[in-house]
Amino acid sequence: MIKSLSVIFPLYNEQHRLSKLFSEIKKQKYFKKENAEFIFVNDGSNDKSLQMIKDFKSKNKKKINIKIISYNKNQGKGFALKKGIFLAKRNWILTMDIDLSVKFNQLKIWENKKYLNKNIEVYFGSRLLLNSKVNAKEYRKITGNIFNLILSFIFNREKLKIKDTQCGFKLYKNKIAKKIFLKSRENGYINDVEILLLLLRHKIKLSELPVIWSHKDGSKVNILIDSLVMLYHLIKLKLKFNKFLVSV
Image (cartoon, rainbow, N blue to C red; front, side, top):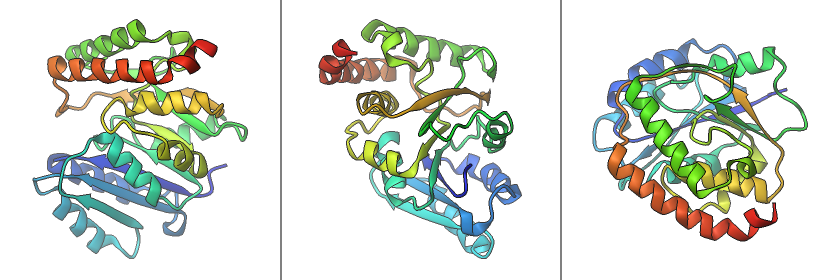
């Protein structure tokens, strides 16, 4: 079903995680060079991340199609995803977290289990489905629960359709991703919720699929500060999409 793929990695100060990622990319035999591209979006890192990616690209340019987007000021994950999606050229676009909390083979698992349907245009990986396998530390569970409580407080979860908006493993048809992200205005973590609302408003066919997810140390989320920021932006989204949500 997936004949070609663009894989997008948004990143900010990830020098300690990149070597592991590079090793996993080199192991991939799922797609040949002409059918796959890996897009790194350096979101204003001030560590060695950018140089490491450049070195990796230089050493592997004959075997791996690597593209780099970089800018000086940190803008947020949503902004980085938009940059990557607008550059993507393949038929499908996969967004992934650079810590590989969900690994590359998840896509193959979805295909083998025949979860991918030609009529569906977007797939959200979900840690909250019964057949998902999740290995998370207690504080990460607390962070996720806080966010879900906030989300449930502001939105009717049934209208959102999706249980887990924040899992970074998402698959889009290229033309759909470009159409929806062009309309996106949220640059931070709440971008995922805005994208879901835009997909629903435009009646895009989407599905939520189980993942094998493993917690990785090094999260940059501050439970107190980021929860307050998320609350503010979720309220803004509620006001922005309220007319649509009432009509659903």
